[in-house]
Amino acid sequence: MTSPLTSLHTIRRGEWRLFTVLFLLVTLISVNCAMLRSMRNTIVVADGAAELMPVFELWVGLPAAVLVTWVLSRLMRVTSPLRLFILVVSAFLCAYVAFAYWLYPTFARAAVTPSSVSIFNGPLLVWRHWEPATFFALAELWKVVVLTLLFWGFVNQRIPVQFGKRLYPPLLLGAGAGTLIAGPATLWCTSQTTVDSWVGALQLLVAVLVGVGVLVMLLFFLLTRMLDDGPGNANNRVAAHASVTASMRTLFGSQYLIILALIVFADYVAYTMCEVLFLAKLKELLPNPQDYCYHMGQIVFWSGILMVFCSLILAPWLMRRYSWKAVALGTPIAFGIATLLFFSVAYWGLGPAAERLLPGFSSLQIAIGIGSVQYCVQRATKYALFDSSKELAYVPLPREKQMLGKLAIDGIGGRFSRATSSVFNMTLFSLLGGVGGAAPVI
Image 1 (cartoon, rainbow, N blue to C red):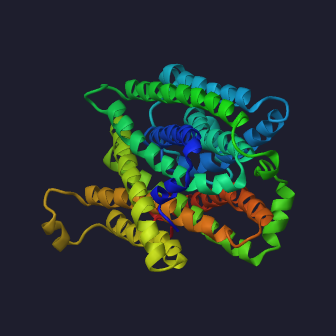
Image 2 (spheres, helix red, strand yellow):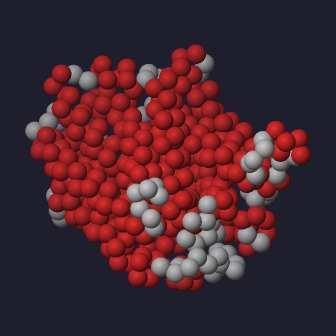
Image 3 (cartoon, one colour):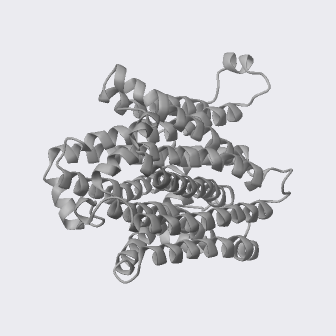
């Protein structure tokens, strides 16, 4: 495994213009992804309750992703990629503006923690909290639709396989660069010196989203013009769509892919279950939505720094010095250690000796500090270590099995894993009396 910067040397002189446009697109789409994640967490948790996260994931996020994917697959057959991309991105931007400037100020109510959360009352909770549920769906779908389906679907059709192998490694830095940019942008929009209310901060955040979205559409227009006359031919292009039935048949017919799918499943479940606990504790310390979102912006910024560091230095060094196994195990080991520290302090407190060593800080403040580090480490190692080792695990497979396996594991398996995590969370919340009671079991 080489560093993404090393991979830049494989890009030839005539390919730099195309690479620059692609890199900017990945970066800017990732800016909005990171900002929307902070806004989503604030609107759902700080304005509502952490218990609503798994409810929205199961009853809003999963159905919306399936429905939108089905609709887009039909639209792709009757309209051009450029027209569809502009139509979809414009619809997202208009929806964000409508939410921030009309829906939220008009219908927002005082935060109410649900008295009970279970699998069965999920639709009722979605109905009662339809405003944050609406934004949850809009925030979740941006990455799924714009980055995965429309952008990568178009690029994989138009770029030859051999060119893509040289192009994709350095493009992965775009996600880290986008996160780095999103952090300061979120901090500026939510700073008390910039705006004096959460509604004003939300509207400013959406204004930045719209500006970035317009740039994304302009760059995609330029990309379509370049790729229409760009390198490669139809015989070398990666297929954009594959049969879901064929991909599932390939998955269950390969012990190798089944084990890889179980690893991805476990990663998703662990991350999403623990995320709810951290977000719930963060609300205890920062109940004001503006302060909450500001802290999320700080986390995004440091996550971006760690992503870039792990991608450029840590992951290549581990691969050269040790093995694939060291890179693959980096994420669960780092996540496990940080999570145990966070849980211990957050739900059992500090001992008297530790409290004397840290005067002026409460157990909750120290827990949030540890949890913030855990959040950054988990996201950075997942992006730079876990995802990169997962991509390397596909390499020994034949080309067709790679494509069908990725569709089954990354596409279908990812959403299924998050839905499963939501079911686990809601079951534990209902049996053990909410987030606090469920924490030791989780």
